[in-house]
Image (cartoon, rainbow, N blue to C red):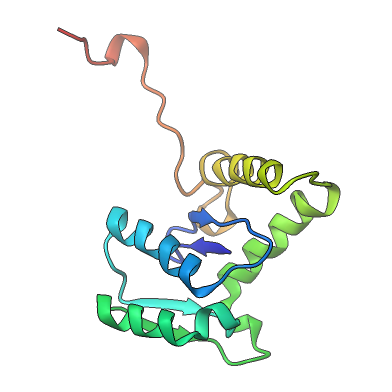
Length: 143
């Protein structure tokens, strides 16, 4: 499960599992809402883990709204579809993972690179969350 911020193009989280259920979707979103606040809308496809009553009820309870794309209309979710295609081309198609844990570690490393180093054309060829490099003489001192 890939969770993206459509505005910044930042990949907020990737959950790697053999199969996700509604509880794992709620857990991932809870973590993000605690860190970033509750968004007005969550855009999603119509996968069973997203249309589950538990997820719909939880999202309503926290004050967000679901914006499901029409079935068979991936262009309505173009930011995520573009990300998924890029992830497939640049990482998944050329890699064999020998365990779920290996996949989680490598994919998280790729996510970090995607957010901090990889140029994004939609952001003027800048990454969505570039790493800050502070020169040694400008770093705060410890007392």
